[in-house]
Length: 145
View 1 (cartoon, rainbow, N blue to C red):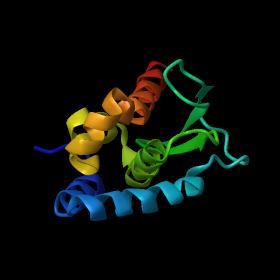
View 2 (cartoon, helix red, strand yellow; view 1 turned 45 degrees about the vertical axis):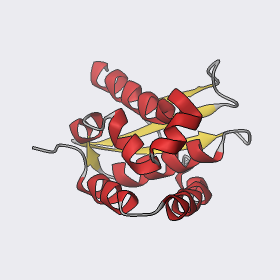
View 3 (spheres, helix red, strand yellow; view 1 turned 90 degrees about the vertical axis):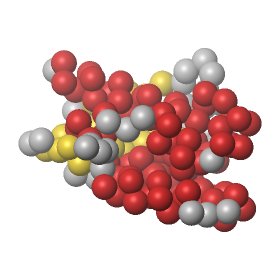
C-alpha cells in the first residue's frame, strides 16, 4: 500500500505524463511559488533548522509545525538557492500541508526523480534530493523530542 501523500502521487503522475519541455516549465512554476512557503513569524515552529551545508549554494531553513498527528513544512531559501531546489521545496511544502508524518517519511528519492525526470537528475546529481533529506531529518528530530 502506498503511504506517501495522495497529493504527491497525483503530482508524480502529472509530471510523468509531460514531455520534457513541459515538465521543466511546470518545475519553473513551482519554483516561482517557493516564497509562498516562507515561515510565518507568528508561529512557534517545533523544529527550526537553518544552515548552509557544504554542498549547498546558500542557506536553507526547514521549519516544522506539528499539530496533533499532522505536520506542515515551511522553508527559507537564500537568494543563491538554485531554481530546481526551489521547485522541489515548493512541491514538498505543498504536498505536506497537514499531512501525517509517516506519509512524508514514506517519500523516496525515486519519487523525486519521477517528478523532475531522469535528465535533470543526471545533470544535478544528488543535490535534487537535498530538501527531501532535510525534511525527513527534521521529522526524525521531531519524533525524538
